[in-house]
Amino acid sequence: MRPELLSHLVIEPRPWRGPADVLSAFADEAGGCAFLSDGSGPRSRWSYLMRRPDQVLRVSRDDTVDAFTTLRRMLGARLPHDPAGPPFQGGIAGLAGYGLGDRIEPMGRDGHEDGWPDLAVGRYPALLAFDHHAGRVLALGRGETPDRARARACEAAGWLAAPARAAHCGPLTSGFEAVTGALAYQQSVAEVVGRIHAGELFQANIARLWRGRMAPGVGPFDLLSRLIADSPAPFAGWLHLGDLAVVSNSPERFVTVDAGRAFRIETRPIKGTRPRGADPGEDARLAAELLASDKDRAENLMIVDLMRNDLARVSPPGSVRTPDLFAVESFVNVHHLVSTVTARLAPDRDAVDLLRATFPPGSVTGAPKVQAMKVIAGLEPPRGPYCGSLFWAGVDGGFDSSVLIRTAALARDARGWRVEARAGAGIVADSDPLAERLETEAKIAALVRALTVPATEAVA
Image 1 (cartoon, one colour):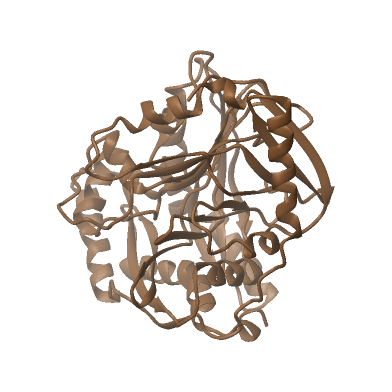
Image 2 (cartoon, one colour; image 1 turned 180 degrees about the vertical axis):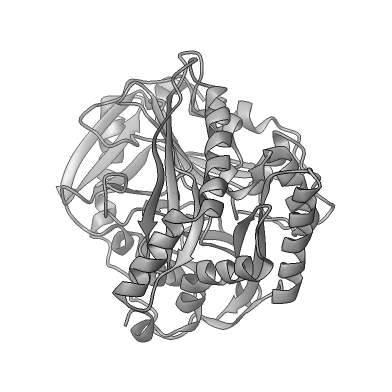
């Protein structure tokens, strides 16, 4: 596709309406994609809603196509960034499944097929951008002529008039249980600790699997709506692929490129977790315990070093920095230890190069990354979307992405929607199997509550 087909941009302001409200009207429509911020801080100002891609790319496990070359061709040549617009001004958005990493460094995937693509994206010439800080919505349209771009902006603005869908109030599942039992998981943790002591690796993120089935008449959007109401997160996301859907309530950014700030890169790996306390005193104690924990700081630092190395592959020498190390950030169910790494994209590199250099996220693989991925492949079934990324790549060179944790993968069959979710923990030399298992249960708690508790109780 010729890049000049999206060379004109029109931005039209509209009054505020909540993004989840707007999305609800189109929740059953294949091809829909959304990035839903909680609007709580400087990194969570914008949400986006997209429909009706004019091009789609879906790369399955057995496809021999070069996913990254095809993605770059689909994105086209870099176009100017409008400083008056939001960070995302039209382009590509969708899913990089965890299996995409096998196309970068073979990780030893077995013959089991989980049905999820390695890559599933659309090109979106029309979108809505929701500015949580200013309380306004921007309708954006791109096209080969100003008139075509204006028509697409008007089309996007029209989505705001659609009536919202009523929320489902009862339990969302008819059953949601751990597939990976407590003892089995603790044995996996003990095995990884032994392999670390043997010198095979320093850290690996090992996950547990939960599965269930949505109740009759309940769909993926009902889960998204419940999650963002009960436990809002800065990097929530939505993707509907027809008979597959991703519902994410992620607290973690993967990597971003700011096209309006000289292509500045930022990544914010999370490593280190404590549950929230039952009262303010206990909550403060747990947060302080996390900040003071040598184990958690070492775990976080290993991933910071890994991400610094990954970013250096696509950045000018000396541009990689760590402005914020070991910050405690608090969410509804957990406290996390978060660090910030920044860099600048080299002039001869683009967002596709960045994705290839950094994927899968280091915080959910381990160190060294390739060996950790091989250990994960030997201990877990294929992850599908989990620990991959929902991302957008703008035609202006901008990029943003989440880490798909706190994420549900849904697949539809003749009986309705099946749902699975996972939660993991970073295993290091002094990990305690019981403590790591309890950490997975703290991390999955919001999803379990959203799926199994009626809405009036879930938000009480």
